[in-house]
Length: 78
Ligand SMILES: Cc1cc2nc3c(=O)[nH]c(=O)nc-3n(C[C@H](O)[C@H](O)[C@H](O)COP(=O)(O)OP(=O)(O)OC[C@H]3O[C@@H](n4cnc5c(N)ncnc54)[C@H](O)[C@@H]3O)c2cc1C
Image 1: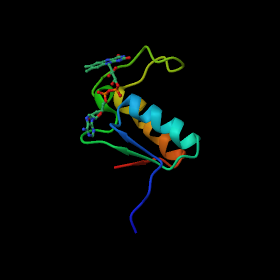
Image 2 (image 1 turned 90 degrees about the horizontal axis):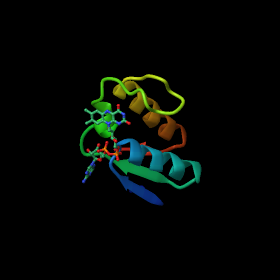
Image 3 (image 1 turned 90 degrees about the vertical axis):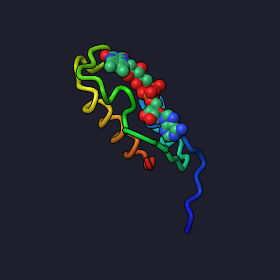
Image 4 (image 1 turned 45 degrees about the horizontal axis):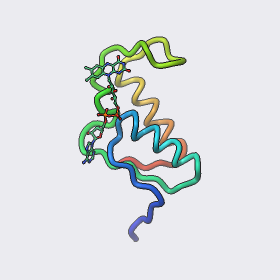
């Protein structure tokens, strides 16, 4: 059976993942559609040192945490 979503977000960069976290947290059945790499341009960054609360991280590590956090709220990423 086809899924029905309350919220569909285009792009799984930091903005899309953050929006997904808010959607999932608000109990909206949320889907994020990504055409390329989960994490967007931040994924390609070797070192991120200006994200509040996380003194240093690689782009892949930080965006994997964002993706995991969205998943914890039941958000699907395709
Ligand atoms: C080399 C480099 C180094 C950087 N270093 C830092 C840093 O140290 N600190 C910092 O704060 N910022 C850094 N940035 C900037 C940071 O990566 C961006 O500000 C951030 O990724 C923007 O997030 P976003 O979600 O708005 O857009 P994006 O990261 O661009 O994500 C948009 C996503 O949408 C997807 N998309 C677009 N159109 C469609 C479509 N039609 N269908 C499906 N998917 C689609 C794209 O594939 C992409 O994954 C850096 C950027 C680069 C390129």
